[in-house]
Image (cartoon, rainbow, N blue to C red):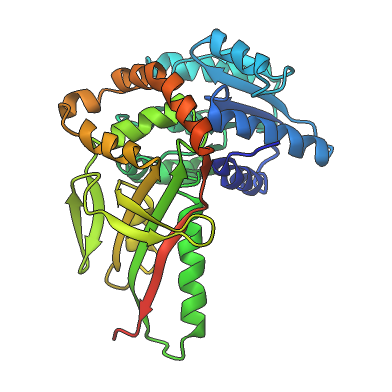
Length: 354
């Protein structure tokens, strides 16, 4: 069974949260999609392996998507469905969650919500997290939108602490696993250094996929939305927002992949690692780039930037465009052998800077 990389960190986060609660009822919002479906399957696998029964419910707007996910074996047939709209009225959303929690006969905090319902671009308020805190339900998500993740922390961190509700945001593949890889790389380099005052000078993230990497339409639409999102970078200790899909670099991805071109694309791991990896030091130079095969796809992305930004950042329009393009995208995926190259920070460059 294939596990989407984002599910790996998400499952680890769930396991961590389970250190503070017994989550026997899990609601996976967006569970009919690519990332959500992988999360559902591996929750079921871990539940069976540990002989710890977990009741899993998929939350989403359309029952048709849930039924299609079962037919296509994206999720097991025994998974339940909850109709909900996280982009609708917040009071209705909270009432829906409250009714679901009550239906589980939860008396000891045995419910948890996992939010995989992207794209997160274009959302400005962490409504689902806020509702979970108010209902005392642990929460995890794969948010890849920096402003939304920061808003979650600024507005709700203390509220979650006061309520005793565990919550983890942005625990996908990028952001998420890639930031942990960078942190591990920096720790190892510092450990090897004899200079106790050594500082990080540069952290560069590079990502490469063949085709879409088997991504679903929601992930494809998120890529389109990112073409309208300024890219957060850090240079000489100062944040600099740059145009997406610019400043191409050639990066060596190792044996089997070789050297590939990658372009600037926004990634919350950049400000996360730059600002928080060593908060008492000047932020290192940091940026993130992305590229794909076949090469013309990259130029297509660059060409799409000619579209009005208001259109590129229209979530509904980009979702519809990704669905319209899906047959062509799947054909190209078959031709190039859709896959993901593991996240490789292209240089954990650590210099002796005092």
